[in-house]
Image (cartoon, rainbow, N blue to C red; front, top):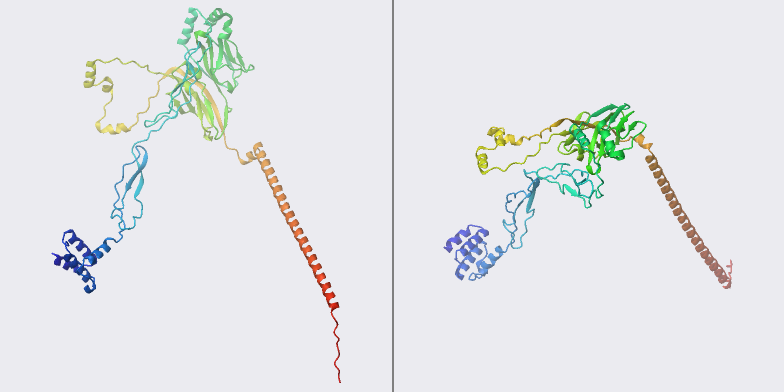
Length: 539
């Protein structure tokens, strides 16, 4: 077996011999020194090494050769990328990950680690919409459970500003209860009226009608009487002097101070000699029976048509539009409002009572909002909820087998259309408006002022003040720079003067030293003996 392995190894390179040698060891061949020596001889002959230089009877040569090959550094290599993981988001968009490992092969004997990223990520999109939370509408006015004697005040708001989508909700509570009791004052005595008067009041409630008056600015509006003559006579007779405080005219549900030069208002009548655009509103005559409650005897809507602008706002500024529907909303709980812009429907609030949507708020104004805005208030028919009777066991079994009436009345579509029918949205049904219960409660001619031009901006006091301030700042800055420059020049001049004085003083001292040296030299030369000079003889 061993000669055969060695013969094969002679035909391969050094690495092949190493593999064959380990194969033999794994097979259990080299168990004694003779076999190891035989392999060592074969390895040395393959490498052309003289056998005489080694002790071929020893297995140390083969062991050293094998150990050199085994301990060679081996760099690591990357494995294949794993499959992408599931998207980590449950809705909307998220990320998914895939990994690889440095084990193909793993670094050994001090080899280098793998270079690169061990993980990769990419964006993934789920087919599920994330819930979008809605926003709350403004709080409705506080409502007290009693008119006097102390009660609980509550207010509500709707989750429709905007509506939530895909299972979203509005964070917070839909209702709020005041901590302090409301209407805690002592209940006044009830202003009692006769049965005949109560019957007349009930007749007003049955046949109550609110007309809408559209008139041009400057037109005269005839006087409107608060109630029938019989009812007013009964109230005057029964309430005596308190009738002066029991009946009053309201505009948009609130008392107002009229312009007496144009408006004729008394306790029982209201008229306009010359209407103005500011007179637009909802007018009502109210009877207050104190503990007996309040009753509206007469009401009408007055819309003054004017070519003038009712409301001016600057571009990009917030503004509000009032519908004047609070009184109608209190009178008719099912009253709703819709806004029209230039005779085109802008927005309807068919799912919210008029008292909660009286104000239309805009975050900012744009120039294309200039035009005529009209608010329409109407009462819709709301089907009363009928309590369902508990079905008997026999009826439940029958409905299970035969189907309920709602299921049998439902139109049946072919099965092939079922996926298509699921994708077609069902539009909201148009509300049924009660005939005669529709009013125009406000008309507004809005003008959005465009942004000012540069020439207009220059003439504004703010711009002039800004220019004056900038000019003063520039003047002060220039003065400060000039002063600083002058100080620097003065410092430099003083420094030069000091330097010149120092040089002059040094030169004076040097001159004195030279003069002293010359005097000393002259003194020394005078003290020296004079040498006699004899002229050479010519003979």
